[in-house]
Amino acid sequence: MNEELVLEDKIISSAKRVFLKKGFEKAKMQEIADTAGISRTALNYYFRTKDNLFYSIVNQIFDGLLPHFEQVLEKQNQTFSERIADLVDTYNEFLRANPDIPFFIISEINRNPRLLAGFIQNSKKINGYLSFLKKMLDTTQKPEGVNYVFQMPIEELITLFYGLIFMPYVISPMVKELYSNDGERIAEYYDHHADNVKFMLKKLIVDAN
Image 1 (cartoon, rainbow, N blue to C red):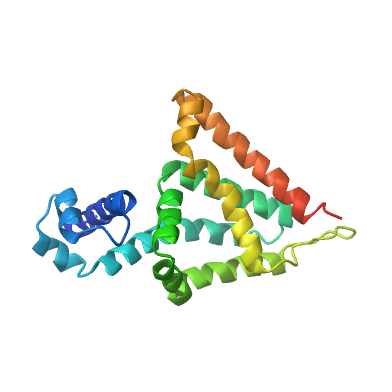
Image 2: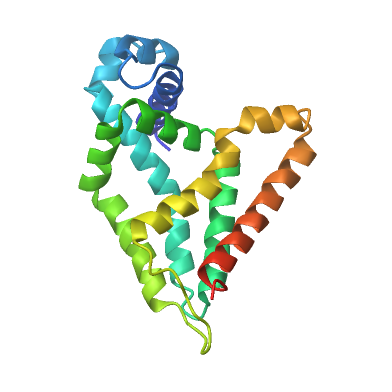
């Protein structure tokens, strides 16, 4: 990775920390520059506005996720339950490596929902991801005699899925406290939670009838 890309990553990481602490509206470009250890002029060279920084953070999040989802979708012979399990495992692995992402997204939804909603509506990348999910629902093998009940709107299914997946990471300070900062027990908790999410989604979507 060349020096410019390294510095861009450093700026994005610094901006994420400031946004998490202050929120998008109260974050100052100078504070982001100070956190990154660069001048305001250098920051403006890479990212002229806070909006550009915010969108770069969200793009980076999806850049880390989408390749994994594409791999799941390529497994054409899986049942719906198997694909859901793969998606849960993919998220669990990604969020374990990036535990601040759910809190960042939810904080900005609460602080500035119009900014994030506008970005989602206009992002080809995110809309492509939603198309991937719809394609998964349409192309999954459905065994005879099994009634699927995911006729709910895709928005409801997505918010249900993300709510179940994100919550343990949103409350991660409480999780650490409950398990006395024991890394091994915390890791087991996240693994057990992923298994519980798979079970609940399977019962809701496949076994409800």
